[in-house]
Amino acid sequence: MTRTTIVFQPLLDPWLIAVLALAGAGLVLLLWWNGGRRAPALVRLLALGILVLALLDPRLEREKRQPLTDIAVLVIDRSLSQTVDGRMKRVRRAERELRAMLGGLENTEMRQVVLQPRDGRDGTALVGALREALADVPPERFAGALLVTDGRAHDMPKNPKDALPPGYSGPVHVLIDGRRDERDRRVVVDRAARYGIVGKQQTIRFHIEQSGGGKGGRIGVTIRVDGEEWGVLKVTPGKPVEMELPVGHAGQNITEIIAEPMAGGELSLRNNHAVVVTKGVRDRLRVLLISGEPHPGERTWRNLLKADPSVDLVHFTILRPPEKQDGTPIRELALIAFPTRELFVEKLDSFDLIIFDRYQRRAILPAVYMANVARYVRNGGAVLLTAGPEYAGVYSLYNTGLSDVVPARPAGGVVRRPFRPAVPEKGRRHPVTRGLAGVGGPNAEPGWGRWFRAVDADVDDDAQVVMTGPDGRPLLVLARKGEGRIATLLSDHIWLWARKYDGGGPYVELMRRLAHWLMKEPDLEEEALEGVATAAGLSVTRRTMADAPPPVKVTGPDGKEAVLPMR
Image (cartoon, rainbow, N blue to C red; front, side, top):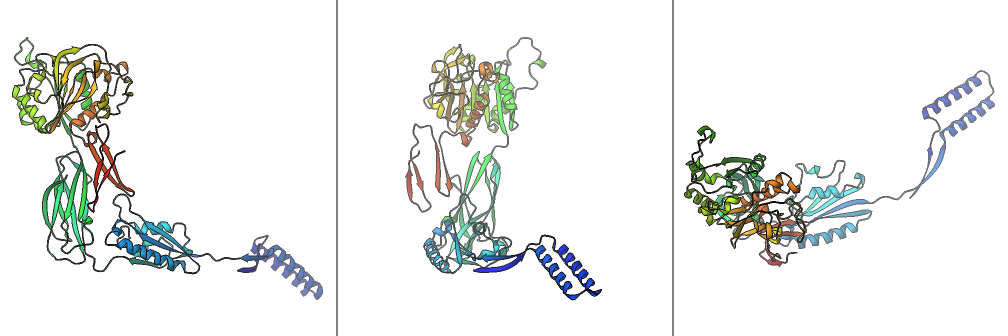
């Protein structure tokens, strides 16, 4: 379409041109009124008009206009909820028909947005997809929107009029692809904490939504904690339920809420099952440190533990047995009496970790107390032994009731010469020593400082040697005994790393990992399998001590199994 118009581009401000025109016309009329002749006055008026026209700078403008198309938005919902009851087939059919209809409209452009399954639990962001499609569309060109969905939009505003961006107006049509007689029951978690204190209770609030009829009354809901059945609740649909569950351990505590199926069938059984993941964290770590023979590393252990504000440290140093008499005044022997019964009988199970630092067998601790410590380990406790020369002697801690759980048996000798602690192949795969700073390559010497003393020992068959000393002898030995764990460090020279001798070493990281492994932190488990659902599928991570990870068997919600090779 062509359009011709006259436009003005004044050389001066329009008001100034108007003032000049009026002043000139007034002057001409005044001269004429005072006896001037008519013809010259008309000529002057004509000249004045030409001057004013020149100041207005008129131009002839010819426009060629082409009308823009209107834009209609088609939003197709292909979220996970559309994969049940043949909905996807109906969605594809509706999509074909709507595309054909919109394609036949004159002067209309179609813009299509497809919602795919999303990561996480954000639901169906129908309104967000519509707004994103209109981000670069002028409001004047918006013709309307067509939404093909199952009717569940998790980002719908309270006022449906606010679904369109500000300034946009137009019809929004929704095509529901479900059926009128659909029946469904689903578990909805209203409130659940993401973190919980180990040993405390967590509160979970949920309710059961039910649509499409169904008999009234209460229904059975099964609760599972870490795969084991916790109990069965009788719940009224639509009524909120609160329950308190214990946070049994650090790391992920998985709670499953499973509602029984509706009689006569329902739309999907997948949403009858909800999962709540609570990460357990320890409030305060109670550590019992028993020191024996005084040595430079004793202060290193104390400083390391006291530097952590989350550690409640109970530290006792036993310098001599009570029957020894050497004239030392009683007031200089101890500030308080050593509470042996309280620590090793009454409150032993309250400690998260027990450390024996160069402690040797003395009359102050009866044999039954060491047997209690062995029982503590088998029942799930954690013990760390750091050994000096006394471990190879007749008063060795191994010659007590602890021998049933200690994985390193002293061979009777002590190696006294410089050596650099090394990490063998098994230690390079173990989470306690894997990737330590300065560990070096498989055939390279570690880049940390030397030690000068190690106890020679034989290790149990079920123990793991993750660090070696002189001539490849065991240095750091880990073992599982019953439900608990125990570690033996066959040298008392780790304090040299703390003093930066010969370059030092990663003693803080090593001791932190060792303590957390002993206390069963999930991030330091040797064998772990983790699956994360993504939009592209399922991402599986396998951590293992084996040379090659075995394949993983995956069972889908529909019961189908698949074996996946690990890369």
